[in-house]
Image (cartoon, rainbow, N blue to C red; front, side, top):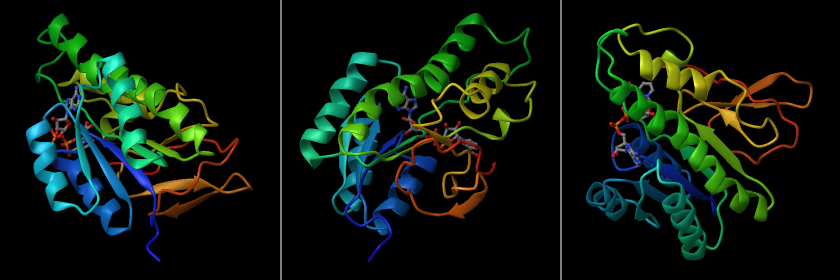
Amino acid sequence: MAELSGAVILVTGGAMGLGEAIARRATSAGASVALLDRNLTAAVRVARDLPGARAYQADVTAVEEMERVCAQIVADFGKLDGAVNNAGIGGEPGAVLECTPKNWGHVIEVNLTGVFNSVRAELPHLLATGGGSIVNVASMAGVLSDYNHPAYTASKHGVGRARLWHQRHSLQCPVPQLRQDADDSGGHQRSQSLGRYRPNAPHRPAGYC
Ligand SMILES: NC(=O)c1ccc[n+]([C@@H]2O[C@H](COP(=O)([O-])OP(=O)(O)OC[C@H]3O[C@@H](n4cnc5c(N)ncnc54)[C@H](O)[C@@H]3O)[C@@H](O)[C@H]2O)c1
């Protein structure tokens, strides 16, 4: 049996790039995937190619839109077992004096607040089905500092390093294809699956790209 057989997985930013790759990997592992993206045309194109997948249009910065679409996903699939919060942008390159307040605000809104909005919209549905996994995609810039992308660096530090996400409900995973589950002794085991949520499991970065 495939490792994600029967699971319903939401991937934000699933219309291209890493999100599309994650969706393809989850599908090949037996999951049904909900592709959420602001670019519906591209999401539909990917969904057509993935058995059981559906595309949804939403902007992760829009709170009510995220809540409505997550509820629609659960109505369509019957449940939600996991989510990969992957949607993100790089923003304009340039050191701090070249980084405009507008660019700063937009990058933080999408990359950091967008993850917060996504977690808040997804978590009640995961808990309603007895638990699940949420993977928030950060970056190497969430660990090191990229002085040419200060907003991106700040946003990814927020996602990848800060303990913003309640340890009972969230794991961090800067490398999408890998995640670490905390085992009962507090150590780690590397896994390619989206396993079940474990109460009181500490969240820690799995790896970096
Ligand atoms: N590509 C890399 O080398 C790399 C490295 C480290 C981390 N990451 C992270 O991985 C994630 C995906 O990166 P990628 O390179 O595949 O990006 P990408 O630009 O190829 O794809 C991003 C997707 O997210 C969607 N998106 C962007 N803003 C959105 C919003 N507000 N609401 C909904 N959807 C939105 C886009 O439409 C697009 O489909 C990002 O969070 C990025 O920071 C990427």
